Length: 140
Image (cartoon, rainbow, N blue to C red):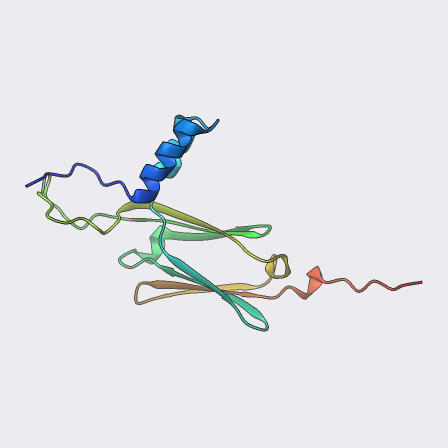
């Protein structure tokens, strides 16, 4: 039996390995390595962009959504539900702790009206197209 003290995903290990081969410094990546990244879907229809994030088990008070230009950031924290001080894990696949996803959106949605709903473990963000991003240019 192996007692796990921490869990690192394959993505975390890849970032760590790439840091050694690039100009990046590992301390600058530590914040990123300590966060998990929930899976997302991003779909577009005629007038909306829809982002769906799978973040089950998180209190809505622990989720924040921000927009800076053409990037939507979803952040939060999932607290561990195992109360024992030193459990022995036989399998550990659920991520706990802070998470963050940065989603670059098409410019036609930047600044559009945003709504968000959290239901059954899925966060659904809808962004309306921003008609102000389009400008008609008259040819003289």
